[in-house]
Structure formats: structure tokens, C-alpha cells
Image 1 (spheres, rainbow, N blue to C red):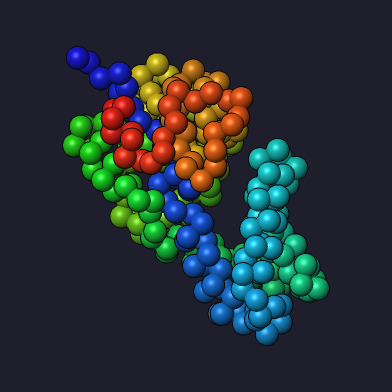
Image 2 (cartoon, rainbow, N blue to C red):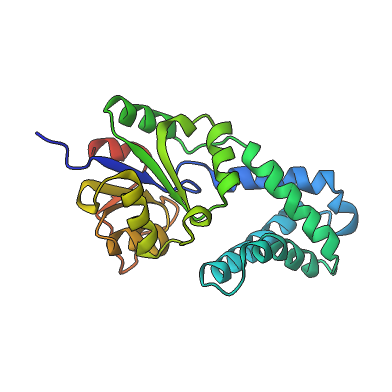
Length: 234
């Protein structure tokens, strides 16, 4: 029987690369290196929670086109500092530079990631990445975590000039990889970004986010409790 899918597309952050674990580790390094406990707060958990809130807010504004990439990078840090009564723009920009320097050196992957990628490689599936992350940062994450060699194409929003969930970035990826929507599947963790965008481009989509119950009106082709379940589909 012929394979239903010929190309597999993955999101990177929160799908294969464990962004939350790696981000916390990066923020801890940053907190210590810049001695933020002496000028902002001694409570790292409070600092991390505050940053996480503002990071999500600024990413949403970025996806909607309200701010540019450079503003996203430093303003999420600046707004975090403001909550601790610091309005130091220079420090915020230094934090941004250090964060993006340290983050891609972290290597935590989700459980089952390597097993899945090896399985798909053995099955000779061409695999690709579609990500809203920054070009250089995403390539460094792939290289440092030891999974870069699995992927033929890495399509970033920075490279393509289009962001998920716009169907155009998925269509761009399909053209770049020489395939079509009916022969492809997208695997991602965000219904409103990865899954909706892929569905709108005519692709099947597998939703993987075991920490968030699937209660949305968006209907993915598959819902995965763990990455290993994808091996039963492909």
C-alpha cells in the first residue's frame, strides 16, 4: 500500500524542542550572569512568571503585525523589568542579546522526539520545519540539539516574510519542498497557529499538546497524546 503522506512538516518550539524547559534554563543563566537578583528581585520564579506573561503578549502583538521583530526581542525584557520598577532600556537590550545568545545552546527535546525522527528517517520520509522563530536561532537550536540532520528544509517566518497561521507560509513551504498539500501533514502544538494554518492551506494536521485539553472548534486531522502516536499514523 502506498504511503498516505510523502512529506512531514514539523513546528519546532513546543513540538520537538522543549522550549519551556530550555527557556527556564536560559533565564536562570541570565538571572545569575546579569545579577538581576540584586537589582530586580530575589524571587526567580516570580521573575520567570512575569517574563513568560509579557513574552506571550508581545509574541501575539508581533504575529498581528503591531510590532516588529526587533521590538519584540527587547520590549518583552523591558516590560518585565518595569514590573520590578526598573525602566532601564540599556539593560533590557543587553538581556535580549544574552537571552538569544544562550537559548539556542540548550538541548532539551520532548520525550519520544529522537525515537520518532529516527523512525521516520528509517521510513525514508522527507522531513521539514515550519517555524515562526528567528532564522539563526532556530538553525542553532536544531544543530545543538542534534536533530538538524533530519530536516531537508527549514522554513522560518523571517526567511519567507510570512508568519503562521497565514496559509501562505505553508504554501511557500510546499513549493520549496516540491510537494503538494494532499501529500503532506503538519505536526504542531498550537491550534490557532500550526493547525489552523495548515488546514487552511489544504494540509492534514496533527495536534500535539498534551498539557492543553482539546476543546477548540478547530478540528485537527489527528490529536496526539504523545509524539510516539505519530508512528501509528505514518
